[in-house]
Every structure is written in structure tokens, then in C-alpha cells.
Length: 198
Image (tube, rainbow, N blue to C red; front, side):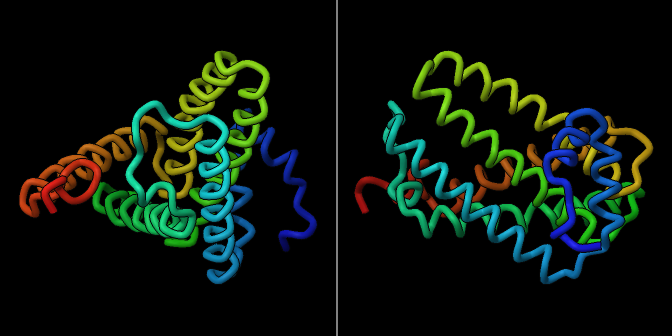
């Protein structure tokens, strides 16, 4: 099967109604590795652009680090983060009895990020009309995204329960935060980059 004959709208609806079935459809396509990683890069690019547009239209009240205002660096961070996430989910999942291939995890993570990009675009449009409503939509999208992600990971790693996948995601997040804290403590870097004295 190819990407050209895919009913993306139908797949998006199925993702919300039955995320495991949607993940199974994506995995069963057995897309070439190059296609999957190219899609991941394109989705990261779209997310970086949308993040930049959102910041221009609705500046954050808290000053952001300069690296977050550089589209290229933001793209690198997003793409790199997705690649790390894919590998971390795969190997951590296998460590607790999961099964699956790298491409299986990569395709579901890429599709979820594509849906998040679409949701971000909707948030930007709604915010032009009602910032409060946009905030509510963004919050709902975040929680739905967590639920979809847990089911996607469960399907990609052949877990019997989405709760097991959710626990794996939480454990990885805690480990990542702890690792960042240790790295900042060891290197002496500040929250926003280098210390003000540098």
C-alpha cells in the first residue's frame, strides 16, 4: 500500500475513535524506513513553523531562550526529540516484554505528531477569535493526545493494555527529567542556557 491512496481524514477519525486500530493500519502498511523518517522530518518542520507562528502572534509572557526563536534550531530539537523518543520507547518497551520493530514505533509517533501539528494549527486559528477557547481546545487536545499515544505505543509494542504503555511513557518522562536535572547540575548550565555571567 502507498501513502497516495490513504484516506487521511478517515484515519484521523479512526485515531480518535479507536487508536489501536488506527495504529494497526499504519503498521500494516509496512512503509519503507526512508519514507517513515522523511515523514518524521516533514512533521517536525511543520511543528517548528507552527510554533514560530504561534509565538509571533501570541508572544509568551515568559521570555523564551533564544534557541526557541530560531526556526532551524527548533526543527533540530523537535526532530531530534522525536528520534530519541522512538528509540527510547522501543528499547524500554522491549525491556519490559514488548515486541515490535523500530519502524512500527516510528510510524505511530510520526502520525501522532502530524495530528498534533493539525491541532496546533486549529489552536492558532481559534486564538484569533477567542484565546480562552483556544486554551480549552489545547488542553483537551493534550489529554486526548496522551490517551492516543498510550494506545499507539501499546499497539506498536504488542502490549495487552494501554495502561502498561502509559506507565512506560511516565517512567521515561521521569527518567528524562531526572537526567536533565543531573546534566544541568554537573555542567553548571542555567535553565535557559548558559549562566548570565558567561
